[in-house]
Image (cartoon, rainbow, N blue to C red):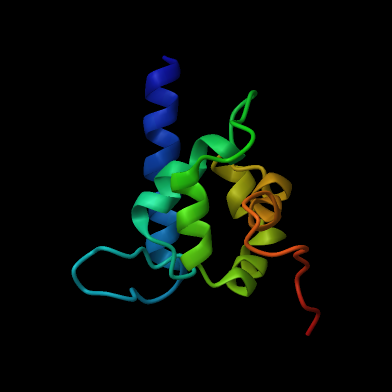
Length: 110
């Protein structure tokens, strides 16, 4: 049952990703979620979901975060979509700092 739940979470996260914005590359190398590579998304999911998320994030996750549009993440932070699919928004927003991509990360107010 746990394996099924994880597969469903990945599937649902990918569905959100595909709805989020336009794809960066047509060959499928990049997701449409804030220009983050699909492999990076998959690698980060265990770091931001479940009862015992992986901490610190894996190098594969951090590699994906390094390529992402970080301010784009802010559009999803308070939307509720991440929580619906088992992603802890706070943990997701902590990844750029935990991965040492930036010293601090805060969403810009518009």
